[in-house]
Length: 298
Image (cartoon, rainbow, N blue to C red; front, side, top):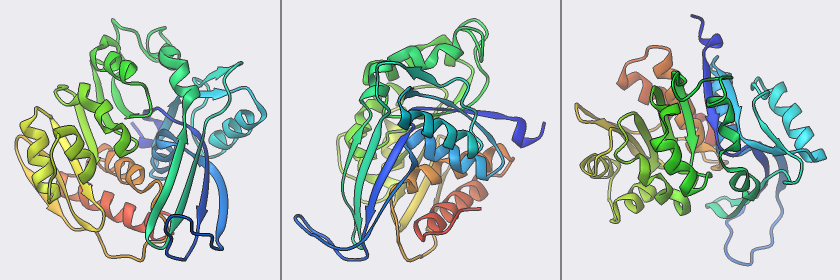
């Protein structure tokens, strides 16, 4: 089967990213020149965009309002190669937004307004139980990229649901503030966790000095397979059989929002193409490095 015909379900936030970027170092109260952009974003969307660039077919399961911003967002998603026909469109919930400010010294502050996604709850999962994509007795088989912008109760439900019993679950927390929402997947028999060093520490309620230490800590807590990143420092992919550490390429960082999502999607795409573990990790790190440098990872 051609890779472009293989669907990858992307479950989570699809919204408008409003990002202000400046070449200046910033601190609290800084008022500097820069650029402000509005682009389709959200963890699930960022993952889907990268999957599409690598030749896979992302299917969005999310909540988007029936307001003008929502219509524009759905059209943008379709133009970028996403399957949007299964998106839950709400009449009374507005389209979600994310706002961030980035300086030369990285992310300064961000606010994620994903209240509509949270309010929609399990309505976004209807295609997985009504026979469109699967049912609880004939569950969906394939990759699922899941992000931590869903509520803790919905993530718990997904972790236990028979509708996901045959899926290859790839899970990311969305942000350190939502890392603990992934606890239901820490002992999941089919879940791969993608976290950074801080998020790994929050899940294990400790602090780690290296990604390797963090990966070992997560495995000791029952994780099946983990990938831990640490910015420009060494990243680690680990399971019960092996621990692989690699250092990402050195690049000039021009953006950071979405880098982790790009890493995760590139790794999924590499494994889906049959790459071995060393190669898959290398491709993911190179894709993320290319992304933060301001180029398009291809």
